[in-house]
Length: 362
Image (cartoon, rainbow, N blue to C red; front, side):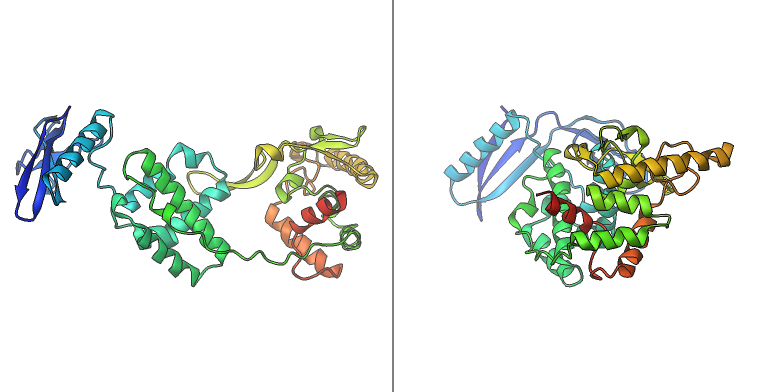
């Protein structure tokens, strides 16, 4: 057990304890000492000179504000017990901005979808770092979080504020795991109330008019698949012929098309895994969809012969004419235009077709 003792001071009692295994570095120019925190040596002193190699030095810390000797002794024993369990006695003086940079570069965040990472980065850049970035992570309190969310609420929709709270909570939860903080300050802040918007769910007649409007256009097949299967936009555009069983009238959702940004900032369309494990599913195809897909496959084979070496061999069921994929945003805009032509409610979105199909399947 670490050595420690209690002393009486004018303002009350204090305990002092020796930290085991403490290491320090000394500046080669000014001899200033820098403690090694979390096993990470420091390279440069505040004066700009190099720091020497880490070496063992005695390090004591104290805690004050105890009214009686018994309170100080009890706190000392509790702290010693935590040290014996391997607790970090000195949370690093890492700021929220510094931790945000580390967290965004972590494998946990890198494993997220590209669009999700971009949203995280945007919330960090627009809110978390400007409002909390200069504060040490261990000093962030619920009041800081609450104030930031209140300010964000004046400029963003409640759903976006909820997302901001969720991102900050995830980041601080990782800081808690890394023993940089003792508690997640976001846990004490209520989620903002989010009023669910009135969905403009299209009827079966609406979907019929939309499919009619899309006939004889580039978007005929993807619109038909969306209106009869309830697949997400990226799932429709990521469908491959090998995922479609026309003989048995079903398809398997195995991939989704998504715009992905690489480390250099360049975006490209990629086939990625579905959004969740539950998204990997088999969907039955109605007769109208089976017949239209058979026709689309024959038409695509003819275009492939004409294109020759210029054909993009991606096995996509919905291609832009030369085998290459449609851009998801272009599909969304085109569908919005077709919905207007078909006389659908202006608030209707492509995603609302999923709700319509689900309702008709009940």
